[in-house]
Length: 588
Image (cartoon, rainbow, N blue to C red; front, side, top):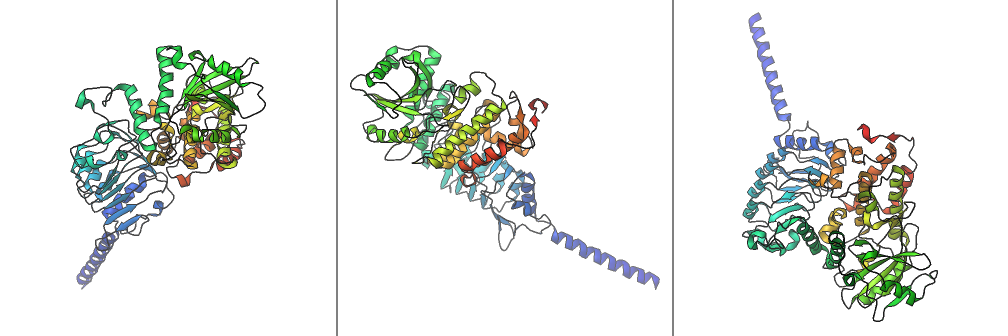
């Protein structure tokens, strides 16, 4: 009897254990859920949505951004765009073999696109644009035979466009623009039907789609895909100009004129002399300059290459010394066409009426038969670009902070306080000038509008600004106040790091300065971006500046603050940090 009872109890215990095991199996997270948990664990920051994903759930179908098939409970869509996600894409995403839609655009994702994504053969749409993805495009993505829409634009991808993409017969939309891709665009496949807009803004692409002849086709290095660094620069500018209009010629004329002058020595004086003969007229905006027009014209006629002090996309800059000791800067802009005069005077009258402590003062202009000559106050400190990257002088922490605040106040005035409001469109270190006390002045405001194509309302990208441009501006060519804010954020990072936005130390790792910041933040090393030669760095001010810059360079324009708000943050969190500590960069 005891044996029977004991056997009965054992059988009951085994049955209960079996039921528990079944319960555990039923409650275990599905393989799709496990793949998404791997994704969540790699993301270091988000808006909090995916942090609410519960690994103890039996399936992920109720998780934010996740859509499942109602019958199979398999994940068919992952929609997490504009969620401030920061982190890599895990290869486990390749386990979602029923996934039809992947939308992770407008975040801060970095690292490579996992080759395992090629296992998701049900995919119909992939949207990864406006992130910081690096590395090459995996050829395995050519296995996605159901793919209809692919957008991986505005990242830091390099290498060639995979030949396997020619197998994507259902592809209807395709965009790889604004990366660092190179090589020949496959033209013997369905990719040939996509327009130039799908490929523009890459480092060294060639092919029929963008009207750039490849080296293998002719062996002509001047138009081929391996034309050397100079060829890469020109091609990058020409590629970018396809997005934002046909006025790049002005930028190239100013850029190459100065390049030849600096690299090859003096050229003929006649080619650089300012031609003011044939009825030039002088217009002065402020009555505090006691100069007759004939006296100014006489000085202009004497200018030649020896007086050049700068070059930029908008034109060559000369130093103009008057007899009474006053010094001015003269910017020469070559006329584009007959219609250039129709609105030139009207726009300059507006620019000449704007006076602010943190803006370079436009005094007047000379209307010559061949060019426009803009007369500005001369600032002896030169440009911020020169101070950071050319002169070798060490800007201490206080100087850098003051420069950032001055530039912010000048830009905020343009956006919010002057009438009419002005979008700068070309914020960069070479357009921030410094006076003798290293106070910042914003220059060249309004010139991008001045050189705008009246019919298309599209403005040129100026030589040297590639690293400062907001992703949406590179794609659409439409400038807004928020594209200026993005450029300002890049400028802050440039001042803090002492490096150009596209410094080789970043590019070699597949980043620009924004991508590098996001990488450092993901590893809790954000302070390492600061220039090690900078003396007296204050920890709280540095952290506040990094926070402001991160907001400014958000991939989503809506998440960027206004410049008024930026100034408020700078004054409340950077100028008066409390308590104050000094950050020794050499200790890291």
